[in-house]
Amino acid sequence: MRPGPLNLITDIPGLRVGNAHDPALKSGVTVLTADRPFTAAVHIMGGAPGTRETDLLAPDKLVQEVDALTLSGGSAFGLDACSGVADSLRSQGRGFQVGSQRVPIVPGAILFDLLNGGDKDWQKNPYYDLGAKALSNAATGFDLGTAGAGYGAATQSLKGGLGSASALLPSGLIVGALVAVNALGSATVGDSPYFWAAPWEEGREFGGLGPAPAFPSADAPFPRKRMGEATTIAIVATNAALTQAQAQRLATAAHDGMARALLPSHTPLDGDLIFAAATAERPLTDPLLETFQLGHAAATCLARAVARAVFSATAQPGDLQPTWASLYAG
Image (tube, rainbow, N blue to C red):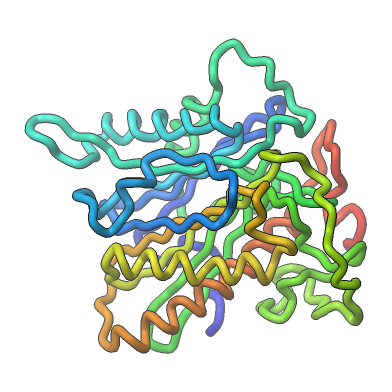
């Protein structure tokens, strides 16, 4: 496998990503959308998730496709970003048709960034407008690091951020990942610059340092954040034609990538969640083999995307944590 030309989730034809953020708020929103509805599913392994419309993504539910997926900061307040996205899509004539009405389907998930030093004393919830703006910014190219839903994100000891990566399979299938890293755990090994995801790095996409020469002890860690202050939320996508059940299996497999790149992951204090999206551009010719390969590629892409998020973070006024670059670049 090798990265696509952009090394972004938007290497999958038809997908677009938009970011919007507010520097004073120290928070933001990221939206994944496409030219037409796409199959979506979700798998949740964290103990403290915050979501909207994830129940309808079960394989036995009526609606099998969505119009967009939204990742947002702001904890429960950030779920209002989905409304801003949905209203904007409705004005474009998008949505699931019921009689004369169209209802855009916009599942979303949030992370907790309310205690990151930003101004959260708003009179009107800002996430509705951020969601609408993120959708209007949707394009094939987008910023990583301190951007969108990752603008105010943090990890155990370093600033988090927004990450993405892609992989081209020999069969012509493409896999991509998009993640907002706001983890209780750490993306780096101890107090070193080495990323846990290093064995899967492509080129020098997050520094090219290789694996750590030594590893810390396996003693039980103590959380440096409090309950509800974490959560890593992600989307893995493919150009394959998948059923909703197959997409859910893709999301499940991708959690292995989160666990490879963030230690610890999936704790009772995180709301770790992964959406899967499938654009149905390419039918599966060998469903058993290709779904096996897609799951591996999704996990690998997500691990790389997590590291790229932390590697790409940039310093902003009022930060409570250092960036990887400020400590280790050069």
